[in-house]
Image 1 (tube, rainbow, N blue to C red):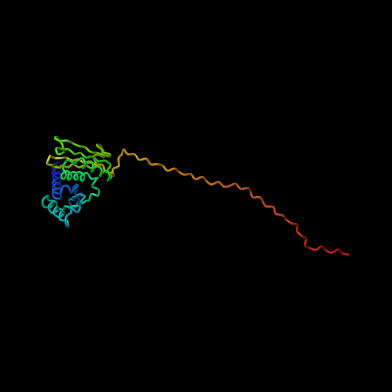
Image 2: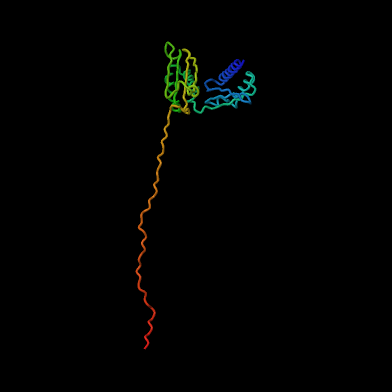
Length: 238
């Protein structure tokens, strides 16, 4: 019984996410996150173009809020638009930029677009990035897969599961469907195998100042003159 409720809840969240992507445009949104709060459902839309998502005088937000209440039976949906400050280290933004480039220029320039995306991500501060492009749309008679990577990446372990930003997108071209996978290791992650050595400061020992040896005080001898007998001698009695 509990399993059915969990599956139904996840399915409802997926339908809400697909509706928001279909209305706002998948290329303009980076990620949609749904959180449950005591006041109602909080829907966070992460994007690098917040003005495009909000719309003129908040028209898009009002339409989405009304649709969530009527179609998905949400009592008090709260939509929050969060701006992606650095889209070059966001895997969803990078993958969707590649999709936009493939739809605009075709698959012939996919290598140049992948190398440019890697260069921009490394300049933005990413520790490592990996891009995998494959499918029938890639130039060639058969399906091929191309892998582009640079920097430092984690394939397994806790950092790979919880701290690697991953995204998977599809691009439908006239020659076939192309799949794009992007994995980025953020610069804020502290890796356990990187050791930092701290240099100890040398302690400066201050020696006590030695007093100069001075000769013992010798009493100064002063020349004394004999006192003059100022008293007059008594006169001899005759």
